[in-house]
Image 1: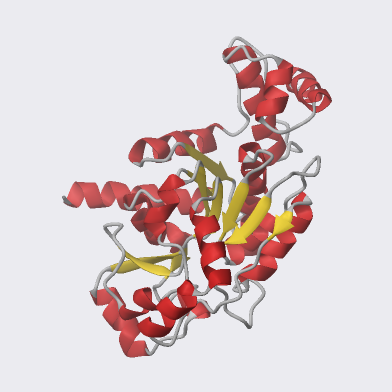
Image 2 (image 1 turned 180 degrees about the vertical axis):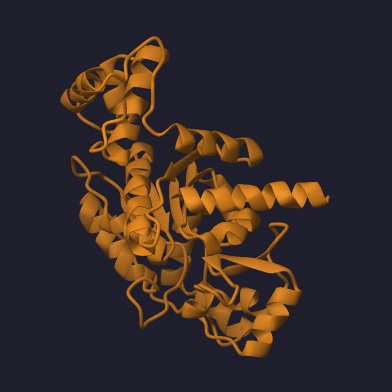
Length: 326
């Protein structure tokens, strides 16, 4: 019987440890190294899993529906890993916070000493950073994937970079450039400045990338937090089939970068350049993110995705519907 007090993130971590130990046959010391945690914590999680009745002939998860959604999401896309958290109906902020906690855990699992971490701005990435609780200092360097936008804490990517580096007790390297240049010539000039070029080149070579996925539809549109555009342009973007914002680039429903002037004035890493990263973790929450996520997944930009049950259910239903239409 499921323990109603059992926290989702703890349950998932216990399940991961039990699977590695009992199914994959890893030693506790190997698990500790792989998941970046102490040997004593691994031992404690295994003991807790036994006490909760999770160790039987098979490993029993208290969240079978979420595990099923994770499997379906990976099967429908090129994702290596998916983490789906419970949705808190009627409370989007709590749901986002829970997604942030799960993504923080996944980020720590993927980090190694010596890594370069590149991040975007956004509410979801901010939720990850705020929920990050590492067990030990990490020898990492944190850099931004894009220039910044002043005015809101989550659009100021340098602020998030500094906070993440502080949480990990690593180093922060900041990009002192705007996200949008006034024209293409200015954009190229900014990118050619030594300080800017150094940070962008480092972000391109990052070991781990953490990024949000933005929407462009009028409802819940995070893209316009970055760059308010006229209503006529918004309507034009819809007609062009633009569905998502990813690293401030507008992405079409088929996963390609849209042929839109603002995309050519961005001081940011190109989405395709993330392919060189060891791990690219996307994080998003809210049903308005279903179609943007579908576009980004169609582009194959993510290795892992952390989202919530309602969002992923809507995404999978949209995917199924589009295949039936085809």
